[in-house]
Image 1 (tube, helix red, strand yellow):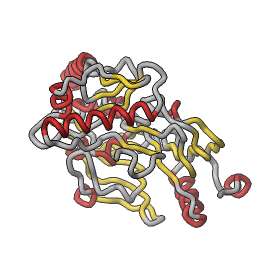
Image 2 (cartoon, rainbow, N blue to C red; image 1 turned 30 degrees about the vertical axis):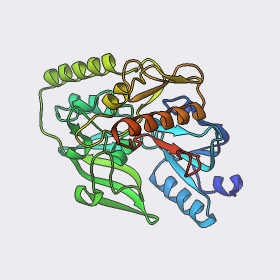
Image 3 (tube, helix red, strand yellow; image 1 turned 180 degrees about the vertical axis):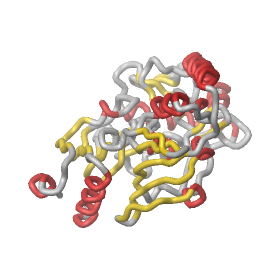
Length: 302
């Protein structure tokens, strides 16, 4: 596969073998990665990508580990975590520059502290900037794409800058699937820090009231169907509180599956299958996953 000796000749960041991935996910579920890497900067990352591509080694970019379910068998190849080298936040000439590894909570606070409004509704989303851009994260009627000026990425082994239009943002998706996100450049309207802090606090309290933030989870499991809500459909099927193994459909929010007792990825998969089957039988709607599945066979939900 790859040679640690060769990598150390050009790589400045951290390298670990057989790293258990559960500790890096909000679900606290997942087996080992063959190689776990934390690049120091963009040059470090680009050199690594070129090396892996040349040898045909698969790799995955790990953000905050939210919105993610990793197989109990783990992942083959290399898992790359950008939090260490890309966790920066900068205020530059009216723009906010946010590294892909920066946490959403820090980003929201940083914007408020610098008198910028618009992203306070994203408070509480457990994501990094890279993951939020990749999935076009949103809440309470807003989404991060609304404030994007451009996104810096690695694409085709080159560092490029993409305009908002080139990113192809849509509901919980984008055209960034073939890119590695390095940073986002945001332009936001001015706001009053005291008022923005108040709104942020209200949104955080509201989120904590209706979501099971105290128990490991991956956020919403399913996308909302058009003109409907996944949680409503699941609740109408009487599935709140249903459990398989250590995984349970949250009694607080039906679109959340929580890891209440050392759940396996297999437990979660079986719950997902059960929910989709029940909702499809009752309503004719096949719920589409919002959570990403990694390390599984393609037909795992069949």
